[in-house]
Length: 172
Image (tube, rainbow, N blue to C red; front, side, top):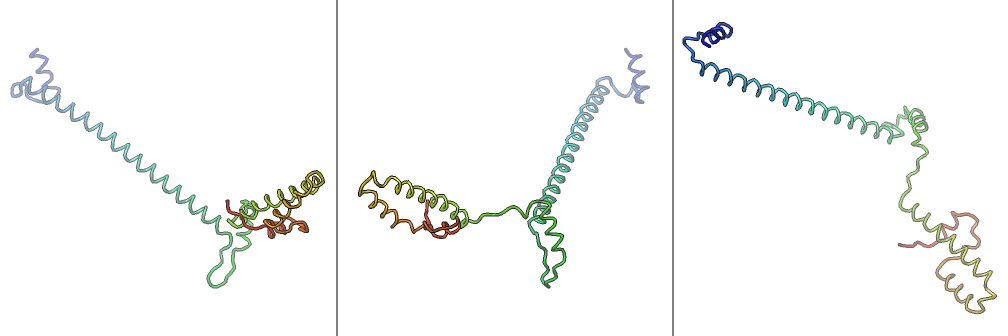
């Protein structure tokens, strides 16, 4: 055993006579523990760097998408001086991307389309009442008059737009 310890002393370059076996193996154990801890710290540092790199790439990608979205939303780029350079390019880009064909519907337009449905339904109901009037007798004309008081005359309307303009606003 002493022969093997002296061989270890030669290999690790220490004097086996000055250092005891317990001291040597204690130092070897401390070195092993510190080495394992350093490896774990290096691994954590690498993971943190990768995480930061991914977050940076995601942020850059989001900024790029935001810039592209802003660019697409601005179809015409006119300077404050009135210089209209790039209008045709903007229009061509809008046609190619399909942005020129998308219509944004405001709250007033949406309400008009709802009223159009009510107006068409009212016209159909009036026509049905007029067809069935002989079977109802005198009650149907009274009902028709109350309907006419609530709704404006829509019989002469030639188009849906005229119906929409004539129909009153309704709140749901």
